[in-house]
Image (cartoon, rainbow, N blue to C red):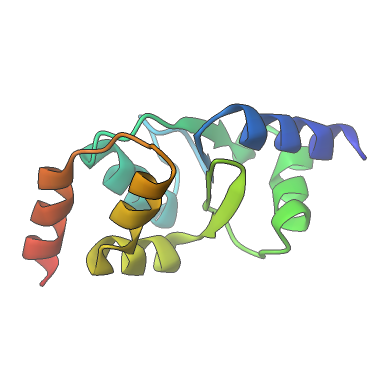
Length: 120
């Protein structure tokens, strides 16, 4: 394994929720990253953010690791969940709530409902 792959594997396995994104959760650098970070922040999910713009090895490495071509990428309990479109769909359908519940991830159910109401 390369250093980037080892670092990615360590990050996704040692944190419950990880978002590989462009920028940071407090300062996203692209609209897609901003949308996913915004959903997680609004729902009160504790997550680790990894800024792929800070390290080209990680930026390419995460695409190879997940075999997924785009960023952002969300991981829950070491498993790749998806990118912006998938996370948006899962949020609106309630699947993201179920995923968090099944994995013991704390989130604000009322906030999740408000997202669905606003987009329903």
